[in-house]
Image 1 (spheres, helix red, strand yellow):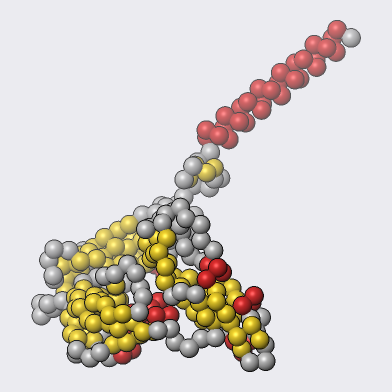
Image 2 (image 1 turned 90 degrees about the vertical axis):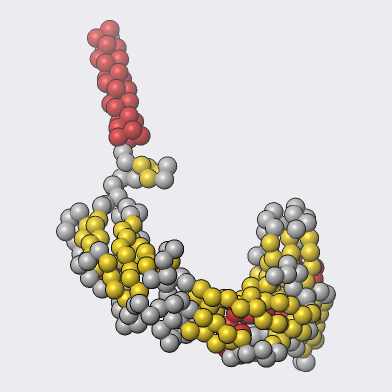
Length: 281
């Protein structure tokens, strides 16, 4: 009996040692990434170029002469993404290449982009025409201005630029505004112009809200459905109880938020929308 106790004690001690060794290896020997334990190391890769500088004309591809290979010789060129950012020199840009792929490290590689000598940057002009937009369409302001034709852009090579519009006012209600419209080309270079925008009453939607905009203080409670007035449609009566709200308002963070209202469950009304603009101060 005494011998059996000794054997059992020895077995238990051996098991404890084995568990301890396993825990040390698992928690200290395993590679970690962003504080989480992972069983596979992140692979290395390199991105190379056929030249340190790329000369740009309007037909140049930023991926020209790019090759990506991982540490095992696998070709990753099709997974490369590239972005361009301006520098202090209008003709000199920085191209940044990387791969966003599971199992690979986050690495970046850069090369210089030299732009054609005649390039002077993008331009934008405003023809002075009046521009009106319903208050419930403000979320689409940039695209509506681009479609209207009241601004004309040039990317510096005779092409068009993307257009974005930004209000100078925090409270978006019916009235007149001065809006900065910015044109940006593929290099990240930009040009801006101010235009006059008249915000009108909401376009005809059967969803009627108690207000088109409101201001609240940080920390205030906010329930978007409290601002539904009515939603009456022939043959259905009042559909207020079927109005849903996509609430993006963060009451802890200052800013201007857009709440979109829609009617659920009725296919012929799926395009009916209304918008509430909420300023958190």
